[in-house]
Length: 175
Image (cartoon, rainbow, N blue to C red):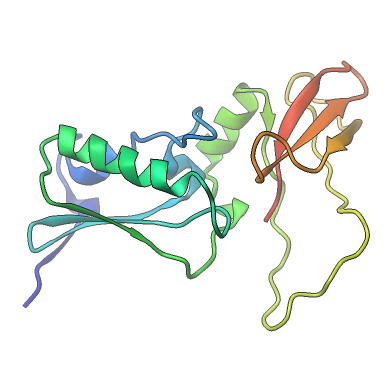
């Protein structure tokens, strides 16, 4: 029989879940993988720490770095046998970003996403027009902003500018 220990029952701050929760996102270093909702599960199975992560986008280039950072953090904390698994279903949603993660994004000058669009089952309808996203300025709070580029430094962010304070900022897109 396989022994599975839920890390919600780990005592102290040195358990594998606590260690995994300290790993930051390589593209949004103000957030941990837990804040971002990418860290899905951490458990111990027959002495092996098993970590499940979900990419924000299919083919996310940061997944290899996330995996390596998790392995490094857990090995450095004394966990020798570690397996990091990629879980694709259900697909990640910006709704998984924690309230603390949203606060950290704003504090870093990045507009957090709004509510993710409803996902339909079956084929995804094709939208030929431009996306209509809105985001309040994380610097002054004004809702009067404009999109400069649908893609920012990463595929999950857009570049926007506030019409009130005139400052550019990134916005995590709702997905």
